[in-house]
Image (tube, rainbow, N blue to C red; front, side, top):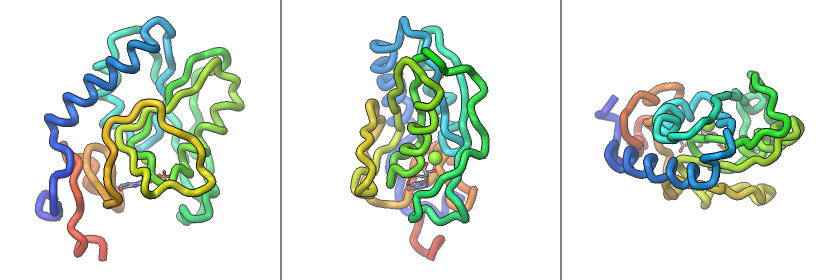
Length: 179
Ligand code: IMP
Ligand code: MG
């Protein structure tokens, strides 16, 4: 697994320190709002569990699982595979995501959650890859862990063909692995 990594982009320690700081930023705004953190499965799981333990105020956990039709992300057509289970009406929702890439999935999740009439919705993403944003996506992330260059990254929840999610850092895959 480690032999397939060309470069460690964000180390375990950098992740730990930044997520503590990120949780403090979110706490400054949501400390008294009892937010619901909606994680977008599956990539967010590792970030989510670290983030939630660094957020030291009352909050609730929920999850959504979405995917694109027939695996073609370019169409931007998405489908809800598993919806949230909490009643979000009147609640302060913060979407937690692993990476804000084209933005198609976040856009879809955001629109979907709006229909549940929350009091507010904001977006907190561990990684932001602004160079890849689709032209029609006007959504902005409210809280960002790290901005990353236009490279395919794995680890800390992010996968390639469902593997590498368990790497404790964010790394760049060697091109020969996916070529
Ligand atoms: P979107 O293109 O912003 O809709 O991102 C969709 C999903 O693709 C993300 O939530 C990730 O799960 C995945 N993804 C995007 N970029 C990468 C990457 O560099 N490595 C691994 N997964 C990625
Ligand atoms: Mg994801």
